Image (tube, rainbow over all chains, first blue to last red; front, side, top):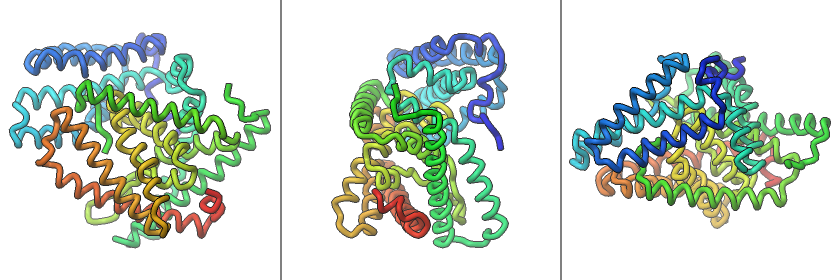
Length: 213
Length: 202
């Protein structure tokens, strides 16, 4: 079982990790606003220069933070299927110029990189603490916290189910396989319900009455 | 489909974020008024569940894999308001922890998936009398509406010409929605066999 693998680089110790979470969240928003709202106002040619400057800043921050660069790169690349599709469709239908195409690709990569820098340098519970200080609803924060807390257990369960399936049931295709998928998800749902019951009993034991304040 | 950051212009971003925030505030307010204490950990675990199934693609052969959004399923089990909160939480977590979708485009993603799946999909489900058919129709239609909204947001931002890629997208989403409906039905059948009180209490 792999605990805390979601934001696994958030507990490193660099000068960026030591900055206050509030500062990091606010500056992430500011940077994203500059990238997504500010720079595009300049027109595509000028924005492209802006994106380059932004990119260099982002790289320097990444280097200082000591987060493995390969991780940042592969995670940022997750956006490529979507952006490449949109960009090529637009390019071939004549809706985009080449500069526009490059700018759009760049912009989406940089914005995902920015967000990734936040989550790789700030533990999730610190982000939640900050959000709740800013007045986000208690129920919302508590559900997020539960979700983060139990996610790795669900991953463990689904891995075990998949392994069992591969061992005993790998030759089924088509409709039968869709049914198998539905059963796996159904089973996961039943286990989530049962776990929620046990968690609730444990909370009751410690005096939880449903009061969130 | 989770829209990443960088594909929506400022007006579309503002309108979608506003609409999503208002719906979320309303739902949280409503749910807060009549929530039972045991539902708090349940909603958390189900958010984790939705988060999980959106990441878990299951290969079904011939090079394709499927995964559920879960909006219709959760809404049938817990009601649309709680379902909507759970979906929004998962979408936010997917955006900040797994880079599926962006932060500025979160409003649009909440509209396309959570509002459509939980309110419109569930509404359709309630309107049709035969419950087995209702699940499938609700799944298919929410897939289509979701595609329409997504296309509208992208084309208003100048990222998609409404005619060109539109028909393909509609077809793909129709099929995805149909699959979502069928699988939701299969899961409900499974629950009725294994733990019927989960379905019958709702």
